[in-house]
Image 1 (tube, rainbow over the protein chains, first blue to last red):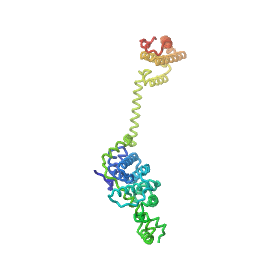
Image 2: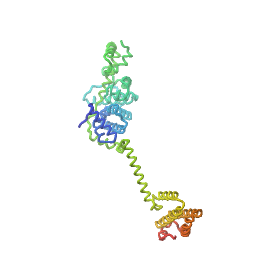
Image 3: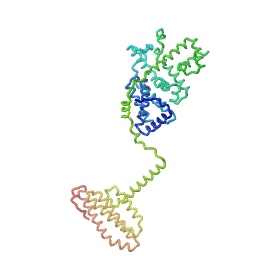
Image 4: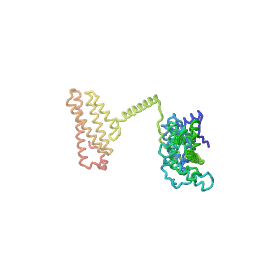
Length: 199
Length: 237
């Protein structure tokens, strides 16, 4: 199955542009090819944010429906991938906010455990990841959207700046604020094990 | 040496590798002698580790994903009007105008035979009105007589088709035309026209009286009775 997420060449860009224009005009075959290129990326973002495959697929579907509806307004002045990242980050954080937290942050006073195959370790790691996701979802929107692009989209500072159309300095400032709040809200969970044990 | 506050402000971009070499060195220098900032840096790195270790999705097949997505994609885009070049717009406008003219011409040809229950009947009335208003004075009475005959023909057809209300309307129109014609005859300065028309007016007067008596019969008998109307093969004028 061909699933290229990056199409760096100018020929690839031209082909992508053609697919975008044809999709905007209602050509579903062109849109299928566009989805084929990016569905892995979108599902990854959704899965990192939500932690469940079925839910991630549903949200990824929502992302592509939004993209399909909005394609006529898309301008080629910014890379499609950055635009897609922005739509995906907004959709997954909205979905994350709508979901009730399954695990209370107060009940998670265990320090970060090392990755292992012990069932208890796996369960603890899942709880920890869930706590991180919900802590992100509880952030103010401008922090949440920025950190979501870094944590769920794995974008660099520069890519976040392009995706959100904001200066690099603003990205740094927002990530700074977002991570400070996350550290406050996650408490001991982000304290290294030896320090948490001695505290 | 950097202060605590400045160092703390820069710890996150420092941990993310976003600082220039000289800035990094200054932070390094402060952390080396400050246990508190060093501990905070460890927390920042722990948080980063948590964020980057959110796992990617397991492999997901594309085909079922696309089929599910395709089933809910909005269809309206397929109906979008294509972008049309200006010269093509002109051509399309011309074609639409030509079509409208053809339809109007077709209606005009079909309208003269239209009866009151025909959708083209208003076109016929319009055409008659135009013809009468544009006619020279010496032909006006002749046209009015033709129109009166046409109204009688329509009334007869409507009665035969069991549409008494439309038949009555046609008779009313007939009387209006004949009265207008009679008024025009009185005022006519052309003796030829007056002679020609006066030869026909007795027949018209007879028709009026017959139509009046038929109308009275209809109003006194059960007007809406289709059975009665069916039994009446011809109207009594």
